[in-house]
Length: 118
Ligand code: HEM
View 1 (spheres, rainbow, N blue to C red):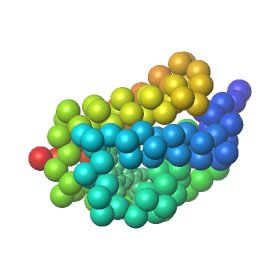
View 2 (view 1 turned 60 degrees about the vertical axis):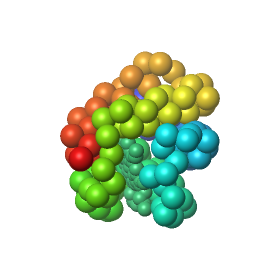
View 3 (view 1 turned 30 degrees about the horizontal axis):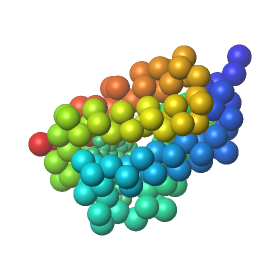
């Protein structure tokens, strides 16, 4: 019985996915402004670590909570949905199986209310 993490090809697979995701964000006029002052390598490590925990990989989440990270960014519902679309683009780019994609999205859906804060 493989974990989601294993189905994603472990750490290397997560790194490829997050690099695609960062590339999507970097090319997106609607979203890029949120990241204007972000430290991208810090974001990359944090997002990889978060996905590792979410997919039952051998990682421990040691960062701030989703609320602490995103409070003050004033992320709208439309922009939240748009970032999810960018993640889906990245998963497609990495040829991630749609059953695996759906399981990842299902684990992220409950985080919506922690991230959208007007
Ligand atoms: C389910 C959706 C999301 C998840 C799971 C998520 C998760 C994370 C994680 C794990 C970090 C890195 C924290 C660290 O530094 O260790 C982060 C940072 C960040 N997130 Fe999100 N996020 C989500 C949605 C969004 C959306 C919709 C936006 C903006 C539209 C956004 C904007 C940011 C920005 C700008 C940072 C970087 C903060 C900085 O380093 O200065 N996030 N997010």
